[in-house]
Image 1 (cartoon, rainbow over the protein chains, first blue to last red):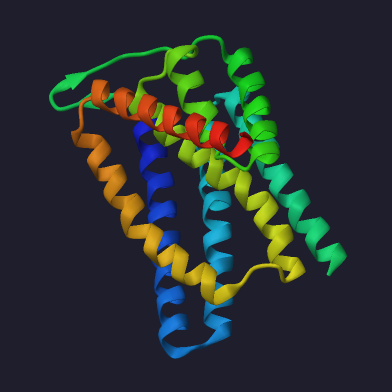
Image 2: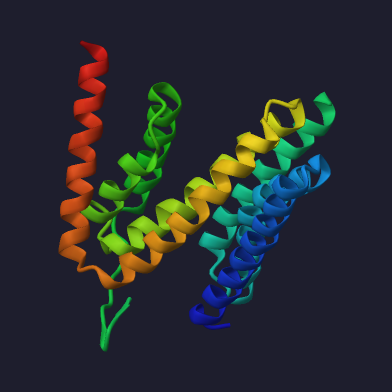
Length: 89
Length: 131
């Protein structure tokens, strides 16, 4: 897997997340729909995590173990936050 | 790094120092309420040998990921004002996209000067708040 392909995949995830969340937030504001606003914010929060997941997968495929481990550590921290949040609520 | 028809090759230096600086950036960001990028971009550029454009992009990506961790907790606790968040995001999105596109066209030297001005502005603001 080449570095440029990894970059393209991460860019696609980030752009897609941005478009979806932006559209949901805009519609939520225009239609005064709280569920849409909630989904928009959730997609926006999930977008960088999605980018990191794709980056980690790309780095594993590229056998760049050091940076793949760093990415997996970041994902672990994000997953821990999610677990703590669901445990508290 | 591709700039026009020229390709610049760079190698990241002093990675352990970069990791330590990120730790410091997180602490300063939490303590003073200023963005971690204020610390990360100059460190990545001046000490780790990362071009200013790449440093800015890396810092933005890092901030997005690290902010997501705390945003999840705030969101689950119901501390996020949804309409206000939506309005701010919709205002910030086009401006940040424009900034990213502009960064591709502006010379690296101009970006460094702009970064220095922003750092001086933040320093002056902090000093005024402290007095």
